[in-house]
Image (cartoon, rainbow, N blue to C red):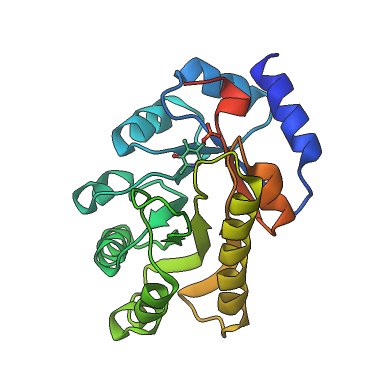
Length: 220
Ligand SMILES: *Cc1c(COP(=O)(O)O)cnc(C)c1O
């Protein structure tokens, strides 16, 4: 199956309210171009340098999503063009994103990453840490970022009940956020959960954005 075939068969299974991020990390520009020519406009990368090189070479109507863990000192390289940062997991990182966005007189959209998996290795905030961040004075004063929602990764397991439990937990947290009043820098509408192996479960649990790599581009 070609990249275009993979894209169309995945899209056919996604409800209209679910956005597809094509995760192109480690893949060559030619593969991204093939997906682009098939109509895909949102790509996800997890390394800033690689994403920037691809941004330079590909059409400018692509929306670039940073889905990986972000080091504070590298935010400046993607600030000019990044469209959504999925993995924001600290006030310190958010502060730097806000600072870099201000330099370009723009607003950078962010998702806060929540830790839902059993594995300790995965990044993310607890619900308590999330609430502390969102109620902090520092956050309230940030004018150049907008929190568009949350993101999470389930445990890497064959146990579907476990995955479902974790995604349901994330959806519950998202519902709590959605009930809070929106402000200029807080507009939760995106729940980013689901990858190649678990996106169907994620969609059933209320995902609005799936991040799919290997099912589109092949294994890495
Ligand atoms: C690599 C990656 C994906 C895509 O994984 P696949 O299993 O290839 O679909 C999704 N989300 C994050 C955060 C990733 O790092």
